[in-house]
Image (tube, rainbow, N blue to C red; front, side, top):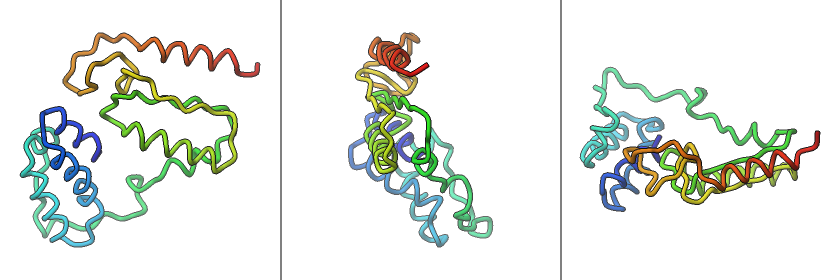
Length: 166
């Protein structure tokens, strides 16, 4: 979610420093061990234009706050599952995706599959594509979509399917 909120700030014209601050502080809301750390993160984030409007973020009162337990799904790392994959995998990312950090995601899949010794996978970043692999100029969430897939996505998918064993 930190990446998504930061990208909304970027698409709204926020400064690079604000975008970086959102990416740094948003996770602190969940992992802050003390109320003071939580509150400092929330107050700073609310001061960044667009954060409150896009997320509805409001500070929680201290008597209602408690640290998040670390055994919930928010702390689940899907790469642990990916590394145990036994079937061929085609992993696709849109270059201009504002929902998922394309570079971080591609590197995480590459590392998980590579370290596990997997060879039957392909990791592809599709140029000019947003999260749903549709054509986009900016990838910003407010940019209208025509619902047209990027040709490279369709070509990559077709080639991948044709090379799979029957």
